[in-house]
Amino acid sequence: MPADASSLIPPALDQLRENPQVGPEEVPCLLERLAEVPDPRDPRGVRHRLTVVLALTACAVLAGATSLQAVGEWIADAPGDVLEQVGADLDPLLPRRVLPAETTVRRLLARIDGDALDRAVGRWLADRRPKATGLRGLAVDGKSLRGAAKANGRKIHLLAALEHATGLVLAQMDVGEKTNEITCFQPLLGTIADLADVVVTSDAMHTQREHAEYLLGRAAHYIVIVKGNQKKLRRQLTCLPWKDIPLQGRIRGTGHGRSEIRRIKVATVNNLFFPGARQAVQIKRRRTDRKTGKTTLKTVYAVTSLTAEQATPAQLARLVRDHWTIEALHHVRDTTFAEDASQLRTGNAPRAMATWRNLAIGALRAAGAKNIAAGLRHNARDPRRPLALLGLA
Image 1 (tube, rainbow, N blue to C red):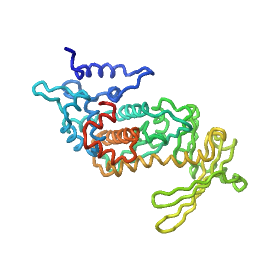
Image 2: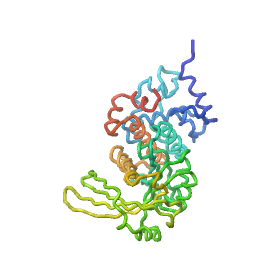
Image 3: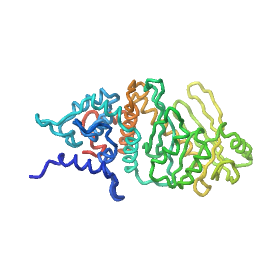
Image 4: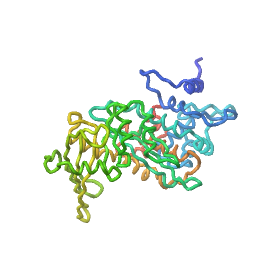
């Protein structure tokens, strides 16, 4: 009689943890990616394998769990076939599988290597991206976990890289207490295997010469907003003969209770005080509040390493606008998952829960979901649905 498939999972995962390299023709499943995360526990007395606890937590969040208490309740109610799929062990005394308690999940997430967990989740999501057509944008921006203050009062601040077209978070890291987003920019993108021909977008904080040189060195491109932190560069941009340059695009849009018109002009340049700059961009935004009727005008300047042959004015305007796709991610985590309201503060647990939220949102978007809240409610009605979305069914 053949052995139970679940009995073959533990040695396989142990081998993967020791040798996680996978051939280029293979696409690792989630359990294989999670096997790359080191187990922080003493192996003596461990009752639940790391991958089992992590996979069950991921499924619970994908079913709408917003707290570790809710995660524990979902695991307690999980049917036997779900536990079997993630490799939970059989109880030696009772005809059931061993369930990790909420306290087990809480202690494990508090001690987990947050960087390793983010790498594993980011790589799993990256493996499932559709093949890109045209320019591929990647937004870099940070978000603070407002409710997760540590004992010394420091709030956890996470820097993430999100793909414009798919909304998938490909990398994330904690901005340490003694540093800032600027110093974490290169280490963050260093966790992404291939940046060739990717267009990295960021806010004015990351308009740094060192960042531009790094991206050019990895065969990537950039388009960055120029504000007061680059005074000489901004002065150069404002002094360009914009009045003599014809209007090259006009985009109308509505949303968030306002209507907007964006007018774009682009000029080819070769002597700006910024590495690799090939085009200068001027965007004039005219916004009207649809409730009050108040209109505001704002002029935005940007530079890019893309040449006129590589990107049209309309494409540049879209890249600038699509950068704020990452703000949509932050909004979903705050409103749908109540991230800012969470008071979870123990160790790395707040960061780990943010990673699971990124995974849940990414898995739903990869499956074509338009409304994340509706997708979570759909998953909550059947515990097998999160397994299917995560490729574990």
